[in-house]
Image 1 (cartoon, one colour):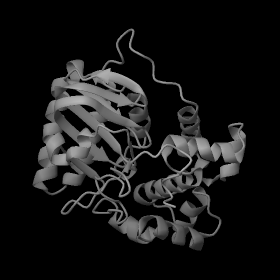
Image 2 (cartoon, rainbow, N blue to C red):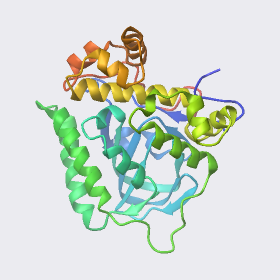
Image 3 (cartoon, rainbow, N blue to C red):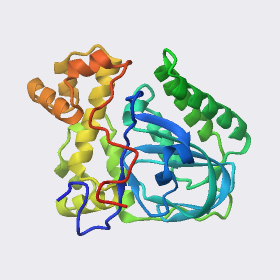
Image 4 (cartoon, one colour):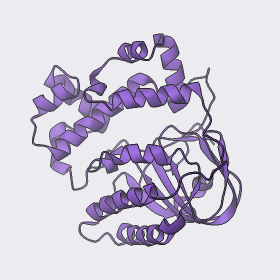
Length: 307
């Protein structure tokens, strides 16, 4: 069985991120047309990556975690990994689409929390931030196309500014529907908060189930229903992410990083890191800040078993 699917749960396509040459990094920016038809997907699906959409034209609605908001350009939409979304009755959608994964947030770890807040708004007006955001996206597009020296650092800095400007935009208008309350989504969010606590990624699955007052089996089912991934897989992803942050942003030894990410044996940590990323901790550290693409990141495309 494909580990990202479970026949007992809703069979939602899971879209992944792969950036073609010459960029080889977990980031892409373009229009609805250049990113491809899946950027306008009309069927419910999940992502393994983040998506920020600045809609500048068109009609229809954006549906995110069962909440439907009409397309009213200029408008921002933020989708985080695991959320279910689609475009309903969309016609003539135009605008910029930014796709990236956790690796691209390494220099600004707090941005992930800001994105989760923004994702609580299926579509909200850009208001007085519309022009600055449009100008910033145009600059990001030029950097992405031109590949001038240092463009990766410029794109990371611009993404941080984009998230900050998006956070200044107004929330949902008065009377707008509240986000749907779904037990699995709430549980997954609580699990995610615990995972992000210091030392959180070093705890076993059973600890989280007990902390959240659930049996291990029910915990597994709810997390997979909300995210498409098992709790164990999410823990491994968080361990890998934290290891990457420490490798790229500190001078800690591999032994120290192994301990902080929940591994008592540095050799086992090194095998784990290579299995998860395709490279050793030393190789990742050597490439950090340059071109440290995870060779296992897949494409901006539907899951091979999906539409």
